[in-house]
Image (cartoon, rainbow, N blue to C red; front, side, top):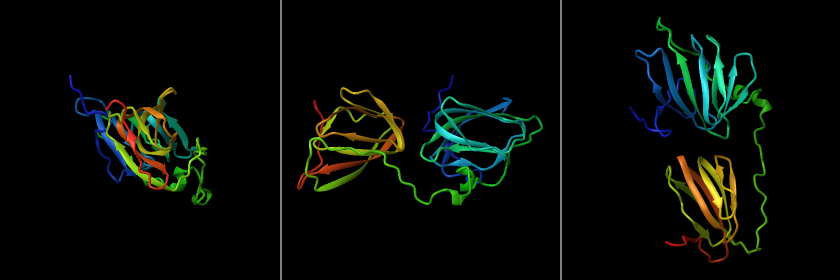
Amino acid sequence: MQISQGPLGGAAAPSEWFTGDAWIAPVVETGRARTEVDSVRFAPGSRTVWHRHPLGQVLVVTEGAGRVQRRGGPVETIRAGDTVHVAPGEWHWHGAAPDRPMTHLAIEPVPDDGTSTEAGEPVADSEYHGGRVEDVPPVTRSVLLDQMLSPPRGTHRVEVRRITIAPRQAAGLHVHNGPVFGGIETGSAVYQIEGEAAAVLRPGDVFYEPEGARIARFDAEADGVTFLGYFLLDAGEAAEIEFPGR
């Protein structure tokens, strides 16, 4: 029996095969095996180049969301739990969604004659977005959160912090002395305000903590979590965190 490192493992993917950041961790390596299995983790927006496999390939999405396209077909969305069957010799590419990472298993039969996967050209932004570059707006704006402050307070300044919680670590029960807004940059965390249902926050998700709210959980998952926290403060007030019981 052998236990290998989890999602944080893997070597950086070769730049000639990928656009953006990606990591590959072998699960079943070649040798006597007739099938090669890799776990491939994509950062948001990253993808493979156009390529094809002599005996085809199967992709099993294990986390996040992504995109896949075969030559001549539309760009399609794939999510955790989806399986993609790529035909032998079919030109295609696959990668993460623009705002979310993705991890999938890549299962590839190995030809007896040693024929290898063939790489083509990089996937252009226009292809990745499913249309011409000029069809993609140069600036997009989305309202992610419109939150009234209760009770009203005089906000004289905003302190912005980038906070990172290591993989599988928890912030613990805590209370802020003022309202806090936040947005996840990378990774994911289980988040819960005391008395409310827990939720998993991922890149692009935002949250609001009312003044005096007890934060029961901010627990980083396997890949850790990094987020920006916006602390609304009165004149002369410092951002403080209380950890009950510590």
